[in-house]
Image (cartoon, rainbow over all chains, first blue to last red; front, top):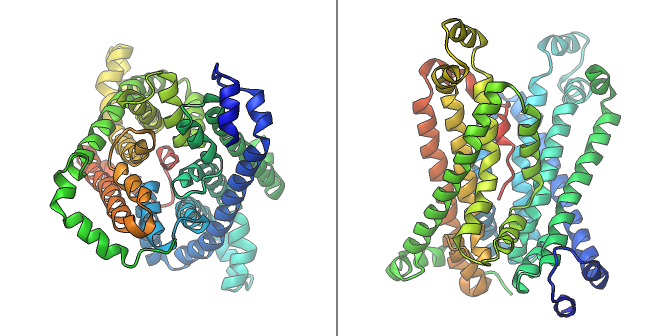
Length: 228
Length: 246
């Protein structure tokens, strides 16, 4: 274990040490990569499930309440408990972490997409129908484009909270940067390791959030113009 | 490692073993720890966030600060704070750092709701109170605070559920609580501890859902009847809903 060695080489145990970062750059990079890939995959899968679910809740009004309620209940379950439910069946692997992350991201995205779809003015919908748009045509050319701000808000919230949540995956052995944080805690409170993991985690959340803001600007130029 | 043969059956057996309830470190002990840590953390959070939120709402300043605090804590991983604070406190282990770390996660929903609660008070009611000669402090105490009570209750529910959920992670940093049961189960491996892991998960989830339901009832009780319907619009998340998960 390389962190053990660098700990002994620096008995002062500072909050940050370049030496630690240099000596363990491979471990740190691997952790960042795992963290980013878990986040990306979880959010992507969550979007793929959430979009049809939201459209269903939008089209079939009686289903909106139950869909939001069930995802709300899932969201209330603590992550540790959720991982505990999944792990006995799927074992301790990436799949368990991914399933947990997707379930949490789902609520944030579904709620915001449904809100976005509900914000489409009824006159616009009627005008589209009058112009001869069918159900699907209206969905893809009117409703979804107008709901893009809501979709992106949900995406941002889901991404940021997923980045924070990945760390809990350390319980089942795949926590990305959580791995560093927890290892530092177990290594006699090795501050540099804990801090590097934490700071990189927050930085990753900020970077991804800014990236999504940029995407939002590019995809919905009208919102920026309106704000001005 | 293969998955456990029948996790649900094993979990039922584990929960039905009386020794698992009453042993030192059994379910009752852990439940007591869990509730103590959570209650202290929420109390500490209220002590800090409510006066600040009410005051900021009263003066109408600091809306940006409230949003900033909410967003910042959303990005901070719970695990990071739970491991960093024991180091800061130098004591290493024990309850205090865990309670403080959990209180940090209770602050955003409490603060945001206290702020919103005061801000949403009808400006005409505020003006009328001023016209009757009430001072700033009196307006806050007699007009804005009563009108903010439903929001304070909503913030309290969100914060309490959040803290109870996060407290499950305290077991990682030797803080005790119900999470310890899950952690011990993982220590035994999936094949041997699958039942215990599942049982612990059920306990933690049940406690969180119970808190949500009970405090939701409290929130309803303290909300005056005319205000009840309007705030239940679907698809309009309150600011407090954007808390990070633990």
